[in-house]
Amino acid sequence: MRTARRPAAARASALPRLAALAGVATLVLGGCDADLHQTDDHPAQPDVVRAGLVDLYAGDEVASADVLAEAGCFADALLDVVSLDDLVAAEVVDDKGQVVETLPVLDVDVAGAWVEAYTGCVDYRVAAARGAGRAGDLDAAAFLRCFDAAVPPDDVPAALVDTLTGRSDSAAAAALLGAQERCTTA
Image 1 (cartoon, one colour):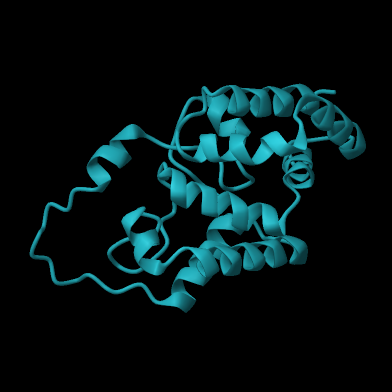
Image 2: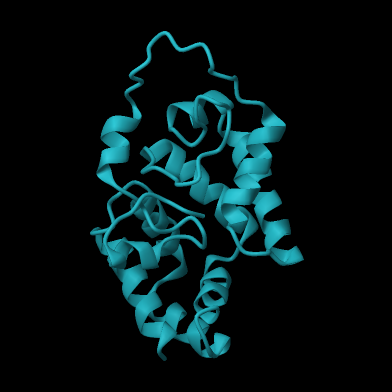
C-alpha cells in the first residue's frame, strides 16, 4: 500500500504496499477543507471502501490470486473493527467516499487496528520476503532466517504501528528496517 512520503529508510520498512509514508504537509493541510460549503461530498459506501482498500493493498501491479485474497481478507478485517466514519476522520477515505491513493500517517488507534487486520491475514515476514524478492534474486528461506534472527516476531506489530504513525525512528521500527535491508542482501 502506498503511504505518505518519508525518508528512504522509513519507506523500506513498512507493510507491503502500505509502506512509503508521505509528507507532513499532507497531515497538516489534509485536515483543512478550504471550501467549508462544498456540496460535492459523498458519503463513504462500504463496498466502495472495501474495493479501495483491496486496491490500496494490492498496488498498481497485476496482483496474484494470493495477493488479492490477502487484500480481501485485510479489507474485511479492517472494516470489521474500524468504522467508515473513523476511516474518513483518519483521511484514509476522502470527501468523495474513495480510499486515498497515498495513505496518510495514522493515529495510534487506527494504525493498531490496521496492523491487527493485516497481521490477522498475512504473515508479515513472508510478505516482506515476497516484496524484497520483486527487486531481483532473493533466497526467500535465507531472508526469513535472517529476518527471524534480527526481529523477534512479537516486535513486528509494534514496529509496523510505529511506521504507520510516523515514528519510523523508534527502536522497533529501526530494527525492522535494518533487518529488511540487511536480510535482502543476505
